[in-house]
Length: 595
Image (tube, rainbow, N blue to C red):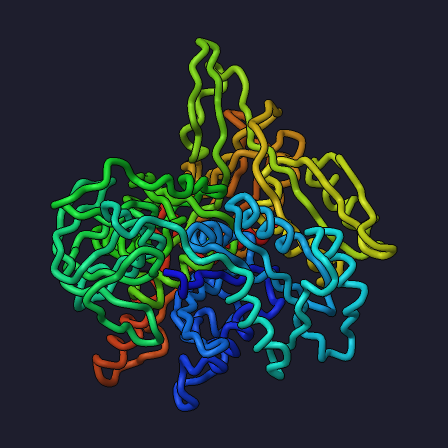
């Protein structure tokens, strides 16, 4: 146990976490030269394409210092605010954290929030100043920022460059010397905390865990405490680059267990594993349940694929514990799921993963946040879907979730950032100059306003310099109205949204104009209307037309006509039949990108 060190790497997006992880693996010989590649731990195509980490990855390395052999368990974590749940789980399995700060960009919003997460769990923090080889690096300035933030000494900060390999040995030595060894009782009954899980189509579910007390041997009968299910540990082992089976894992070690579990619902992240012959009395107090911020409906394009979509979502949930979903049905789209995400990027990634990993083409409805509605009879209702809102005659008032947003930006952009936040109904609460040209602005604003395009706009007006982080506050009463979209008098529930009443007229007009461009012309006129309750606030009309795809085939082989009709049929499949008007998938997405 004395020779084990469990640590994770935390930082803001793009400060060089994954590159540093690559170097650490290289220097400790955990990967051979042949296996080495950039972003080694990011094994999803999506992560490589976008250059972001989506999933936390655990890997074990060995390091020798002063003739002693140490085992280092590293967990590389995501930096984006939408994946902060991954970070909180990784932190729960560690005793130390490398806090990485980019020497060119300095401390940013996500650096601070990840640091607080680590401090709450009493981790030993090792500050690392990365990218000091860049011509634009300002190491002395950023060092002062780090000292202000965590109150360490100048010599505690390790200057490094993950690209060139500078300072890597100092980091490894600091991990061994400064990160405490795991604590626990090897003689106590087994308690192991699951911090991640993946689905393997051939071997069932693999759970990754950290042994807190006791030990587990291959072939032991174990019990998962949250579900009460019992299994045999068919294989346990360490997480090297390839899984390495072992006979026993004892206190402080991190590893995986395969026990032939087929049902995705039987493994819960944060659960405790114990042995059935000598069970632990209580589960480990893990991390709290995830609180989804953004809700959207996900529906299969073909209603017959509903069960297949359910299976895909369950397997995806294993790999991404922050996804929550429950079945729902819509008049326009049939059966689907109401899913909870941590943010818009998270939603986009899930949609993309469903398509790539499971071959499921899905339709996503307009995302929204959850509200509390209070009726005149004094009932409190949780509204995750705008169509659940009670009738205006029975509704008393609605409360919406507020957040505290921390924005760190250069002082040149303060004015434009403020006006953006005030447009989004934000209230300025605090303004602090961190250095002469870096300002931290604190706003309180409705979560519903930042869901759609806030982050993109913030990046645009600050030329990419602003960093943004938020955490939830309470629910507050506000003047909201439900905006409905009608096509030929039929309500399209997938396009409904709950919005601030003063913005409803302008938004209703914009949506109607957008739909007029996107809805293909039919054999009949289509009326597109937006309404609040029974009051129509705007209208556009799509004029009629007739289209005949086989017109150009005069005589000749029947297969030519069939080919054209097949092509038309394929196009029809991508569309959704909404009553008697086809709404293309692009219309659902375009509503999100309204400017």
